[in-house]
Length: 163
Image 1 (cartoon, rainbow, N blue to C red):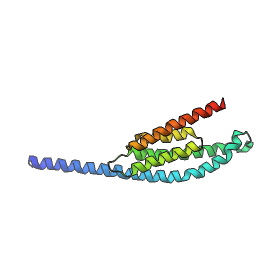
Image 2 (image 1 turned 180 degrees about the vertical axis):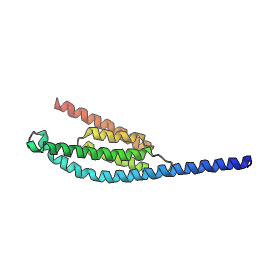
Image 3 (image 1 turned 90 degrees about the vertical axis):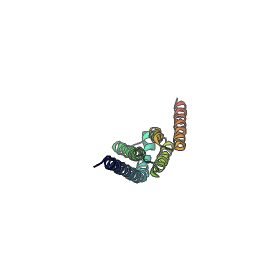
Image 4 (image 1 turned 90 degrees about the horizontal axis):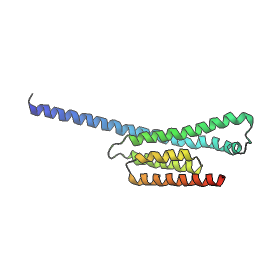
């Protein structure tokens, strides 16, 4: 084997490995986006159960036996949001050039953050917004940064109103 054959073999091997890794990461990104979409579609169901009990809990009108029911509903809702956020975060971490899945994941995270913000679940909203900061799209990163500021402003306003 001469030098040219060895060089060509190394280049082909490198190209094969690079392409294999790229395809794996690209398909992983797609799988995480689809998993995130499935988990995101379940969030409203968990929120309905939680939202029914929140007014009763805040006014201390929750029957004694329903305390566990409230905690389970709250846990299920929070977990559904966290799992969807994690799936979209995994999608964003699976960066490949020319991937169409990354902007979709970032937009879904902003939508989750907006829903949580509107439901006054600020820590969940902040988690979703901050996850967008690793997005390669600077426009979506700026939108998320603005929403983080807006969330802190609303939190501060509500805290000052409670004093």
